[in-house]
View 1 (cartoon, rainbow, N blue to C red):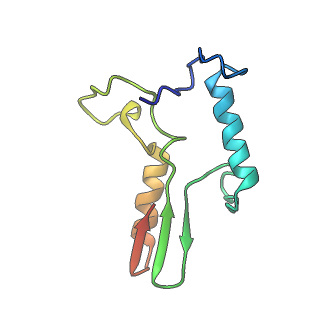
View 2: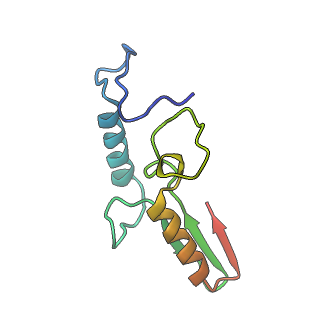
Length: 109
C-alpha cells in the first residue's frame, strides 16, 4: 500500500524528516533539477506534456501523481475530484491535445 499521502507524518526512524509533503516537494524539485525535461511554457513545474516526434508520432507524457485526488477508501459512486487520477485540468488538456494531434500514432505514457 502506498501511504505517502501529503498529510502523513512518517513514523519510520530511518527518516530524519517525517513530513511527507516536504519530502514529496523535495523529490519533485530534485527530479526537475536532474532530468532533461524541458520546462513547460505554461507551468514551470508541470510534468505532463506532448512531445512531437515528426509527423507520425505524438507522445503524450502524463502525470499520474501530482494532480490526483487524496487517498480515500475508494468507495466513490461517481466521478468527483476526489476520485480523479489525472486531475480535471490535465484530463481536459489530454483530451484537447489528442483531438488536435494530426500524428498517425498517438502514444500516452
